[in-house]
Image 1 (cartoon, rainbow, N blue to C red):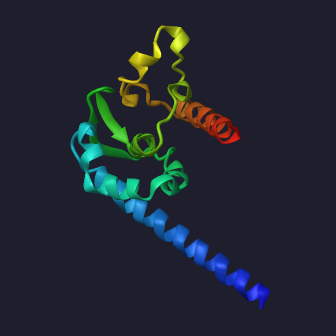
Image 2 (cartoon, rainbow, N blue to C red):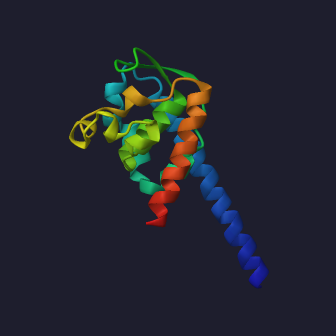
Image 3 (cartoon, rainbow, N blue to C red):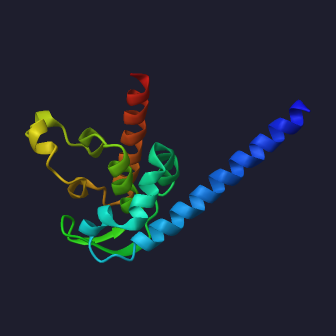
Length: 148
């Protein structure tokens, strides 16, 4: 009986995880069709993802390396965003990512009052190497935040 309950629980969790991942993927695909990154925050699809709250973050993290080009133009980067970059922006909407994750340190000339007003799009990683560096910094930052 105990084993049956464990199996049912596992299947239910896997099914829900798969559904939320697929739903978030579809929502990211819809978001990828908007013409300007300034509009991302106000989209219904973004709000749906944000409604998941912090539960959406582990799913969005799976997309960080997604290099699929989108139609979303960023005035900050002067280029179209990749799907992974959109996922990073949405994670930042749910739970502010420290600028240190992007390699920006207040001691390097950016006072925290200025950082609060900056858009993280300016600091999004642009090469595969910098994406991996961002992910490594992000993982370390998350560990530090959960250790507090």
